[in-house]
Image 1 (cartoon, rainbow, N blue to C red):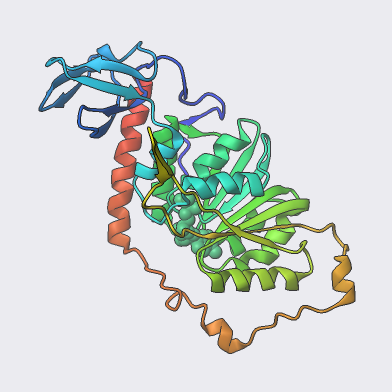
Image 2: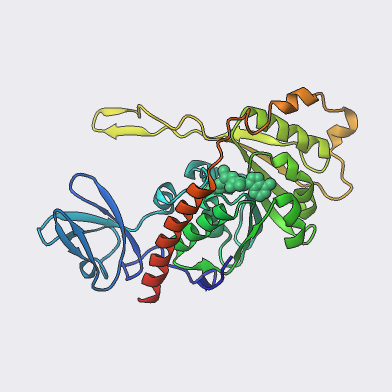
Length: 338
Ligand SMILES: C[S@@+](CC[C@H](N)C(=O)[O-])C[C@H]1O[C@@H](n2cnc3c(N)ncnc32)[C@H](O)[C@@H]1O
């Protein structure tokens, strides 16, 4: 990953306070239509309802109402991380904010932690992890497709205004590259978001510190079952715990108080386990063997094709990466010209 635009982990774009040149601003017009711009001194935002000079936003408090030259009101808000990840360029499917929040809690991500994530995909989870570990923490991300890592890198840079110095991306399969990047027993937390996390359990177990947490984010029940059994079979972790997170929005207006008609029905499952100390054996494993064996035929049911994985073409990915890089370049140059 290029370090040309690296910034100290703590010295990245401000997330609060009055608007400054270089800030991203979400403008909501009279019909609820939203546009996101990056503020530049003397810049202008042109709409068919007139021109909005950036200078009329710079210096205003966050969440101000500003006027275009035609006296049309726009609400100016600094996008939250949730807003950004839901609208940023995507190479791979992202982890939604509801799951990212739960991952931060389940994996017990703490300021100063050394964290490993794979694959990096579009970088949505990377942004949440970087925020949670803070400037004292370290995030090692792994991705086997270079084009995805380019999208992720550009997205993180676009949101933070620079590439954080406490983050690196290694291109390659986690199973091959993790031992090259981290010393055994030094990683506090590992988050796996990939099709076949069971292929990476050995290296994850070696890298984790005793008591360290592994969280797998998995899309289907067949994968959940397989990784859960694979974790048990290693004998190196506590019993895995599985869950899913559903958020149901509510419409609350006057006396019309009811659940929203629509909700996100399914994204993925979370599986959490902790690394046992070297030589430790789970007490219950001493008493009985696992009853949950599976055969080679069952394993066939877990191929990428059977699981409905759609692969993204290299051409499409390169296009997404170029788009993400253009957004990142604009963010960096706006930050630099400030
Ligand atoms: C669903 S995406 C990850 C999305 C990401 N968590 C986010 O929030 O934007 C899964 C990624 O894992 C990568 N991947 C799959 N298996 C891998 C492995 N063994 N090592 C490294 N990357 C892997 C894929 O190339 C893909 O980009």
